[in-house]
Amino acid sequence: MRKRIFTAVTASILTVGLLTGGAAAFAATQDDTSGSDETPFIHGVPTPDENLDANTDDGSFIHGVPAPLLVTPAELAKGPVSLEPGQALIIVPDADQEGVWTGTGGSDDDTLLHFVAAVTGATDDDASLNAGFSAEKAGTTKGWIAGPDGQRITFDVTIAAS
View 1 (cartoon, rainbow, N blue to C red):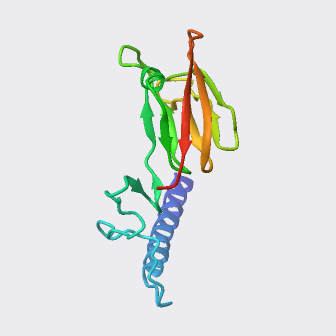
View 2 (cartoon, rainbow, N blue to C red):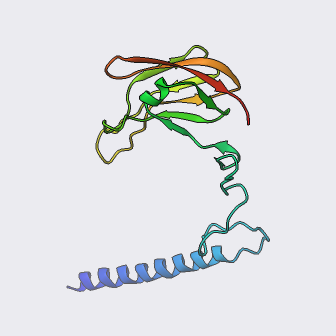
C-alpha cells in the first residue's frame, strides 16, 4: 500500500512540474523583444496581406498566379484554349459523370504544355485530383486527351502573358 501512495504522489509532483514548466515555456515565447513583426501565434483574424488579396481585374490570386481553368472534355472539343504561363488547365468529368477524370493526355510540345495524370485516393477519405495540364511558358501548341472510353480529343492551346 505504501508503494502505491509514493508512486501516486511522485506522479502528481512530476505532472504539476511539467504543467507549470510547460506554461512558463509557453509564456516565455509570447514575450518577443527582438523587435520582429513575426510571431509564431495567431492572435485573432489575420490582417489581409497585399500578396494574398485576389486581383479581380485579371482573375489572379497569390503573387499573380492565374486561377486554374476548369473544363470538361466536351468543352475542350469545342475550340481553342487560351492560358497564361503558370496557369493550370484542369479536366473535370462531364455533368453526367461523377468522380475524377482519369484519362490520358499530352501535347506536341511538353516544354510549353505539360500533362499531369489524375491521382485517385485509395479510400473515400483520401484526396483525389483530376488530370490536367500546366502551362509552362508562352507559345502555341496542340494538346490532346483520351478519356477512359478511348475517345481522343485534340485542341489548340495558346499560352500568352496578359
